[in-house]
Image (cartoon, one colour):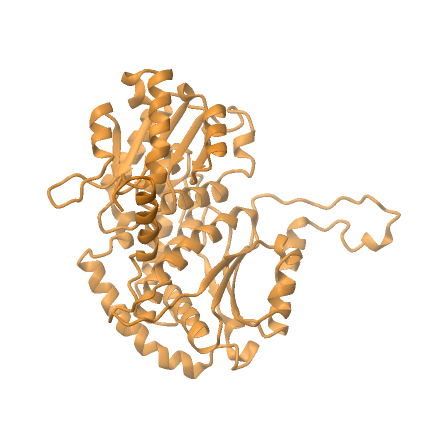
Length: 462
C-alpha cells in the first residue's frame, strides 16, 4: 500500500513464539495441545461473529467502508479549516477521547501543540477534554480563545453528564464572546442519528437551535469501538491526518481477521492466547508495553477496550462469572526503570504485549564526546535507534529467562496505515475474546450504574 506521500507501507506482524511452552515452559506458556483444543471454539465463535457482522448487530467491522461518512468528514474538515483555527477542542470521555488521543500521539510530532502554527503547517493544536477537573477545564478556556477555537462535542446519547456540562460552559462562553449566530462556526456535534427507530439524543435540540454541523455515530457501534467512525475521523481530518491510509490499513487487517483460522488470523490468535493465559495459566493481567513514545496512548486506548468489554459479572447465559483480565499500560524503555523489576521477579500473573517499531522516522547518532570516560566507548558512534532495539531485546530476553510469556506486535514503521492495522486487529481480537469468555463484549452495565448514581446525587433522575 502507498500513502499520500507515495511511500510503500508494509503490514504489521504478530509473533507469539515467546508465549509458547517451548519458550517459557508448559506452566506459563501455551502448549500445542492447548492451541488444538481451543481452535474448535475459535472456529465456532468465528461463525457467530460473521453472522453478527452480516446482520449488522455490531457495526465496528465495516466503519472503514462507509464512504459517505468519510466524504462528509473530509468536506467538513475542508470547510472549517478555512477559518484557520488555532485550537481544536474535543469535548468527550472514554471512547470519544481515547481514540483521537492515540492518533494524535502516534501521527503528530511529540510537541505538536508547542510549536508555531507555521511549523504546524496551519494545523490547529489539539486539546482533548476527557475529565471534569474544574482547574484543567478553566485553563483550557483561558488558553483557547473561543474566536480561534473549534469545539467538537462527542456523545452518542447527549446525556453524558461530564460531556454535557463541558458543552454548557462552552456554549455560554461562545454566546458571550462570538455571539449566538456565530456558534455554528465554532461548534460541531457528533452524536446518534435522528430517526423514528433511534433513541433521542439530547444534542439534537442543540444542533437545531444553533444550526450546527453534525455527524452520526451508528447505533450499532459503541464508544470504545468508534475510532473509525466520525468520532475519530473528523478530528483526524481536522488535524491533517491521512485518513485514506487508515482506511487502507483497516481493509488490509480486515482481510487477515476474516480468515476462519486460528493460526492465520492474528486477532483470533491473540484472543485465544490471552484467554488461555488467563483461564489456564493464571495470567490475570495483560500488560501493553510499546517501545515508542508514539504508541504510548494506544496502550491507554487498549485499556478501555479490554477492560470495559471483558470485565463482566454475568455470562451470556446469565450466570455469575466475574471475568476479565486487568489491562495495564507501560512504556519502554521508561518503565524498565519503574515496572520491569516487578514484571521479572514479582508474581508471574501477567502476559506482556510488546509493541515495536522497526524503523523510526528519524535516526539520531550518539556523538563522540565525553572521550575521557572510557566506559562510554560502547555507545560512541552508535545510534539511539540501535540502543532502542537492544533495549527491546533485553526486556524480551529478561522476561523469557523469568518464564514470563510475551507477544510481540511489530510495526515496520509507525504511520496511519500500520496504526490502523493495530487498532483494527485489537478490536476484532476483543470481539473474539468476549465470545471465548461467553460474555457480552459490547455492554457496560457497571459503568452505567455509576452514572445513574452520580446523576441522582446531582438532583437528576437516577
